Image (cartoon, rainbow, N blue to C red; front, side, top):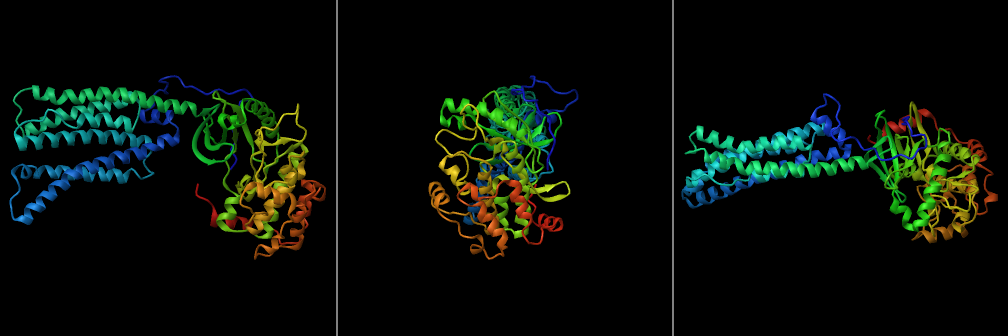
Length: 539
């Protein structure tokens, strides 16, 4: 669904860098964590907590399994357990409880009801409990076996591991680390009060405290480094007024991410074109592409057809990444639709193509050729209460009909053709000057695909596909599908696929008029609504 978003009025945006430590008054630590890390990085907390819980469940269970094996061997031989093993029998109950608690956290962390920031707090509480359990078992087990308290336990290692695996704000991680370190002398004190160990002087508590506290110091330093890297990622992913979220898709020219306007909190989609993609044609080509990008994005932003994806904003980030901010759509592209559910009925194909023609008619009137019309660049979905509402995508990479100063379009790299071979007009394959009829050829290819589920020409590689577009007559779509194809629709699509541009419909308006005249029952809103109710993709 289209979401309005504020732009930057064409100014060159720079990466927004929030002030260090800036947090609204009264904000909790959890909210600070959510504010600093991007949603998809914050979501990794869930996997990190599960990793730690699974690791310690294995560790506690390992000792339990070893005891069980020794007990089973002794029972099989009819012998009593060795004294050092028998003395650890009560301790195995602590191992069992710790293992079950760890498995419970591992399972519970899967729930989406727990926000990642809250789950982070639970993970730190789990760290404290793990350190207490480890210290309790270590002191009790060695003292029961040897009568001597251990000088080292695994508590300092655990204290250091947590901020490395599950990073968070350094002060928060330090507080958790110090509390976890305090569990070592606390466990020793409890064992002494229960009479399970004997502590002769305070040096035992000092010794039990020193190692974990040093671990807490290292944990604080590690938390600062790891969390700082997370903040850098968050900053680098703020483009203008937008913060990037999860990846939506990836294509030949770049990546598309879900995004949120930082002030309005409204969703959008951002397409990023990385500098390394542009520089494949050399530095000169990259500079040329950036200049063309500005003019073409401005032209694309001027398009107002409801069937053209709305371009909210565009700019160049500090690392020279080009980006387009577009409305976030609800539905799926036509290629996905056909691949998942099969060819479309003729009435629906006409309904879709007429909307595509509405978008192209405005673009052609503005002197722009899309050059990459294909099912993957045509989105079909829901808009308000309407279904099967079409949006033509990638108008940020259009080509003016009359290039200025002999420059290539932003979408064209040196030595490369712009477009997709399966939907490319013969004149585009030859590198000739293009007009709007090249897009109409692609519309014919799209209609062919929607009716049959197959592209017009198939070949082992792109060059062979282009060769067939140049010289081979297409097989009528009615011969490649079992679904009925009206003769008038077939004739119209074959006219769009004519090799000479002059033999195609004169323009997009003429094609839309001809499509409307095809004698076929219209595709209704009720049919579209029923289809989307049955096939709507998961949000």
